[in-house]
Length: 514
Image (cartoon, rainbow, N blue to C red; front, top):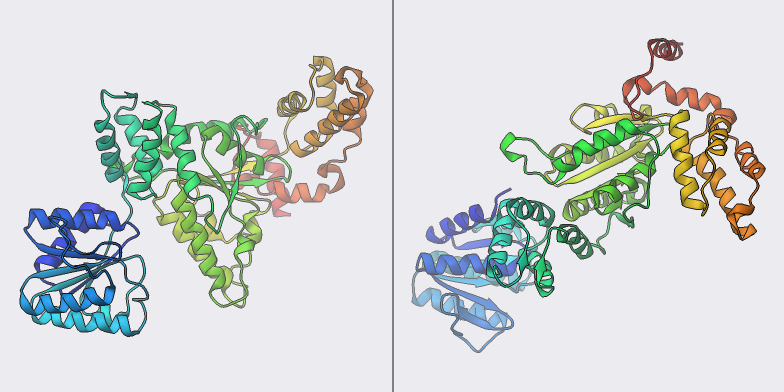
């Protein structure tokens, strides 16, 4: 993907070579015109630009050359200039419907032929495709959004303007992190966000978190993925110590510049295991702890009824995730959306898997994927290959120590009085075989009773016991399902961080082998 300097160099070579037609694909018209203005001054090029608001004007001195602001008038005048003088370049910025065979497209073809005969050049700055017959008369170049290096330079130049006037706490490390956060937005959008900080008369390190929120607001209405609101401290996870330690190591790498080592930022994690044990909650907790926006991709919702519709929607959803990066992308029960690869008669699932694998492997965006699955055997094996996700963790039923932590989290969340340690220990014993969701359901029932009693201290200890006794966990209602899911334990890292003993592993292998 060429950056701004490479794109500018290509445009310069096309202008000096007098290519008769050049299309510049970009959503940043102002940035493209800024590049052309620099080339006009540096290389002493005669470049005239047309906009519907200002008409034709000289790009070097901004002098207005014609009072006729219409596109047709500008096309006619450009034709006259090409015949009267050599090495003239005319840039058009407000051209609609240039991707089809129509009167305007044919007018541009005629003008490009005239430019070729007289050493002229016409250039179109557009975000849309160009009609094939017209594009084949010249060259095309794409001006992508600023990359990390360009964004860092823009940030440093912007801050330099206010040095000494306001308090600026950002050093090179903060500018680097800010640049990684702001990639995916235009130059003007990035500078507008920074301008809101200047109004407050200070740019502190705390503004880095606000930077992500401000960027997120730009993309809040984009289609394809659903924004999930999370707040710091709202989603606490009990147990899963191994997963939490792994995540603590990965967090700094997400916004770190790793290009000098030829490495990419962490790609994400696949969580598999027993239902109700915190896989989905972990996605929310990661976004909350890392202070990143959380987006949910429901693969089933992108499936359409028409040929190519599903693939188009899925591509749009992944492109949206790239645009809002850095972010956490949560894909819940991924096996339900991508299962059936190779058996789907229409081939849609196979193509979606291919798109997803390519994106996982090649997208440079700082999107941390948290995918959850209850049964990885339903997933295409290509998705489980090393290099797709960073790691796969197995989330099992919590042991006594983990249940104690989970119970205490929910007691603090739903009750207003401390619970004696001996009662907590009894609840730990009664919750043997519970998933985290079972524990939450039991404690929530105690919370409801506390609300009805008007005073949490009026809830008898026996009600605590009954609330836990009334829960029928999956291990008792469907033990065969738990055994089936646990057959996958040897294929993933224990999320608890605890390694099972050899006897337990051997028993598990005997179950797998039948």
